Image 1 (cartoon, rainbow, N blue to C red):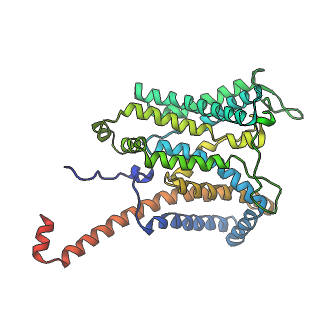
Image 2 (image 1 turned 120 degrees about the vertical axis):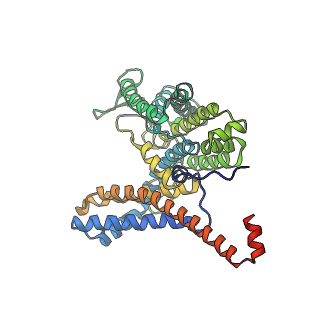
Image 3 (image 1 turned 180 degrees about the horizontal axis):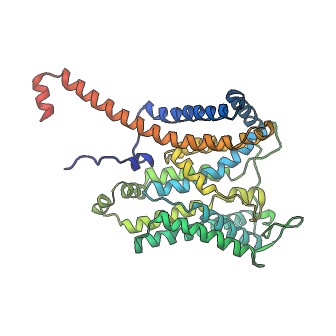
Length: 384
């Protein structure tokens, strides 16, 4: 019987190798400290005080209204990262979450604005349509991979561009979009009150409300954990991601798993735009949030595809985004936040690798000490 497969850097990068013990917290802490150091150097070069800037961001970011904004941003960041993480756990790079959620939100908004149903059914229909469209769009990349061997990285990037063009074309069709009164904007017909999800007054001291669909995001995190870690399907998915040949030997249909994983990732991507659509804008228009899919990639890496880790990563990312709003008022470039976010992601990748190597080295030293302290007979038996 062969020994355990040697982990690759890609395995550690995508979180398929589990770090053990308290050292699992060392990597993100080191990454945040290093990112703070790099950001401080940049601020010093530009003539801005690092400590005062950090305190300013913390002071603004902890205001009641800012906390609400942070939670709302973290809600769709979290869903986006979960969509990416599903693919990552199977060694699939779904770069197309951005196009999948925007096309799904557009079609779901058009359907939601065209029908009138009782409140629960109306909301459920919109969410169902979004998931179906997201899964359908992602399945194109899955079919290309299993049928023709096309890399999902290339196909999903191309599908992002197609989705953008298709969305722009649909927004110019009378059946899909109408002019927004009082502006040059165009969008889908507004969704009626029965299709809207009311916000939650969770934060005292402000009238702003948290997206009601934050509950959906939490539920999706729990479902993701159960599906990946507690079911046979999740085991097959993870096994295929680690070694396709081993999965085939155990009876797993790899092509079927690839297609299902891409569709699940796309279905989750379809939910990304729902908090904004059903909780704030009630219509898909030209100013609908973009780029959430690429942020999800960074957060999935930051959280190592773990639903709890992703939650902390989404909150951190959203906090930095919210805090950046105050910087311009003090003549500090908000781009410093993007530098910090990018440095955190790169630092986490490096830190996890260093921690993993430290664990291997510590394990080897522990075995060496045990062999050195054993009697010659015991040592010979261990060697045998």
